[in-house]
Image (cartoon, rainbow, N blue to C red; front, side, top):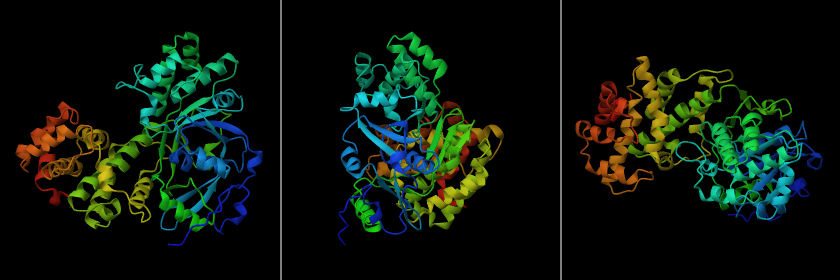
Amino acid sequence: MPTPPRTRLTQQNLGALRAGVAVPAYDRSTTEVGIVHFGPGAFHRGHQAWYLDTLLARDPRWAICAAEIRPPGLAQALIPQDLLYVVAELDERIRFRVIGSMKEYLLASQDADRIYARLTQPQVKLVTLTITEKGYCLDGNGELDLQHPAIAYDLTHPTAPKSAIGWVTEGLARRKAKGLAPFVAISCDNVVGNGHKFRNAVLGLAQARGDKELAAWIAGEVRFPCTMVDSITPAADEALKQKVAESVGLYDDAPVQRESFLQWAIEDVLGSDAPDLASVGASLTNDVEAYEQAKIRLLNGAHSTLAYAGLLAGYTSVGEAMNDTRLAGFVARMMREDITPSLRGTRGLDFENYIGAILQRFRNPALTHRLYQIASDGSQKLPYRILGTITDALSAGRPIRRLAVPVAAWMAFVVREAKEGRALNDPLAKMLADVGGSCVGKASADLPRFLALREVFPANLAKEPKFNSAVGAAYDNLDAFLD
């Protein structure tokens, strides 16, 4: 294998890039920070920062100040590269693009004053987050968990918080004290109702701090739009670094790889002084929930179906499963004929085009989606991805024959893993192992064991005769149901 070039990607060295590598189409020295982002990991850098890199070519006001809360992060990799990095878009033809939208990279442990200075600048209009669902420090009811260690710390150290919620809350408190308009606070995490959860967390912390005026100001003035984000972004590794270096001609210590598909739906409450994200491909909508439901039921529901049916058929990846024309055809029919009728349409969301894009993504030869990874946490995913669609279909009098297949396949997968002594990656792993280990391979005996799991199956659905009949028939003869 050839040794990759060691000349580092920097602003000065951009001229050494190989032909065909896209570079920022603007003068980075003239851009201004308009956004503070907490959690500058791979997804942010391949998704939101990509959109903003496109926007900066026509509007220089929207460069990013990245704020890293939890080391070790990317400071040591990105700062020597002038915050430049390569995004490799993985498809039949891999494309490489240098992203320059990050203007500043600050560490909470060292640069607290500079972060607060940014948070209180009038020209900073947006504060965005990609901190994963755990970073919102919520309890099971979606409210701020005051017993969470980071939140408990933030309550006693409000100006030196540990959580992103603490930073945003204190940043808003300082803007209010200065008489500034609040920034718009945007969650870009893959969390249903993320804007509502972000608002609950920040408002809950303000209330817990005992600052009634701040809490009232946040409740009345701060916008927390919901969003839906989508683009598969596998973790980077040394192989990616070598591939990028060989392909672009410079060494990048912080590359990002993602599929070429990109989607960002944003609740249309940003205001007139926000970046024009619609002009670079984002969808501004009054119905983010419709986009969320389409993603959960069409994309994620089909993913889970391929995972369980594919693993039982001996496949290891989505691409392998999609090469089985029978299984691929089944999934396509289920999406079009069984899932789409359960969805609510909205402007800008074309279901047939969306399904076509999903099927193309599943066949992407440049990405390997491991079925075992998709199959993890099935007890948590199944209710949202499949059971909600089944409930709606039953209420509307529509058939559920195909929709029963992923449920039956999940059950058969649990039984197989238990019988072969493999531990499931699932919060209910022990419970499922006990259920699977006691099964005999017949629906009459096995189905009641699974349907008794209230953590997965609501009582009204578990007792529904049509549901029992369809899942039982699929469980006893899964192969026939794929026709």
